[in-house]
Image (tube, rainbow, N blue to C red; front, side, top):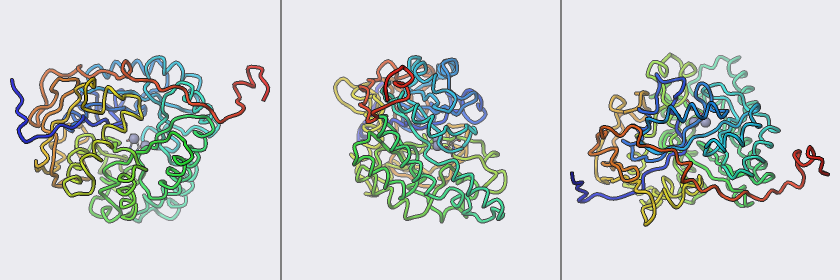
Length: 429
Ligand code: DOR
Ligand code: ZN
Ligand code: ZN
């Protein structure tokens, strides 16, 4: 069988460092087959999967269980180990068992994992720095959130924008600033997930200026939706952190172009239509699928002249590969790189429709959006997993964990001049 690519373009397959594939525990929302099939349809050849499954991925046994679940993946994947209050002692073993990065939930979200104290984060960051693994942060401060939510609940929570009110941008600004201070002190590499506001860009840019190894991502919903969409979309738009104001999306586009925000990820967070439409916005589960629609939505932005195609390759593949240690094997089309390729038709017109998504979460805030540009074939390490906008049969299990190709960066020097560890080992402060 030959593949005709007349008039088409080659892009490195997208590397989405932020997906929730729900298995084990919530397979009515997604599993490793449906999640990776959605990725292959979206031109995404590597995903990094989050630990807020049931059970959460917080010990070696739980990581092994997830590796078993992921046996049926058709695209390559990395796995996050949880960094929580009660598993700091497990982090080294998690890394040895193949965790590719750590995820720290500074604020509460789906899965109800408690946020670690700043002290536990400090210790976790020291360990991650020594291991050379990046720590990705859900950067929202739990205590501010709880306080605001309680005030709003007392007042009735009725306003459609109360979801923003309970999570004002200060919730994220405070968390980004605090995480950056800990990273600077410990030498940890960090990644700020789902940047949603103009405000967060200030501590992010400042930390970069100070030399902290910090990267940041935003997601299509924060670029393409804003507070004017709440009335139209109702509970479907509910996501943590929330979609904010038009001034925020404008600042995020600028930050992507300037490089302050490094990459696009999706926070692919599928829930069933019933779980999204339970009534008021407060009753809906947070998040929606995204791994399948990211590339068509962002190629539309390329066609509109908002970003260049080169910018897009940087934010979808090059920079995620560098940040998470996959460079130079993935994230580029060049001699020696894996043939992880999205073959795109930059002129292809499609309309986003939930009932055509391959995710189990068949509901999207982008319903009805017309896109220009789509991946018409997807290759993972040279093998076609999507062809002519259809899944290829028999590719379940082709996906591999990236552990064996990941280049662990050298440990980062610490700024810390004393550590608890040294004290406990009998050293002097
Ligand atoms: O909206 C969200 N959904 N935000 C998160 O941080 C978690 C995610 C999920 O797992 O559903
Ligand atoms: Zn999150
Ligand atoms: Zn997430």
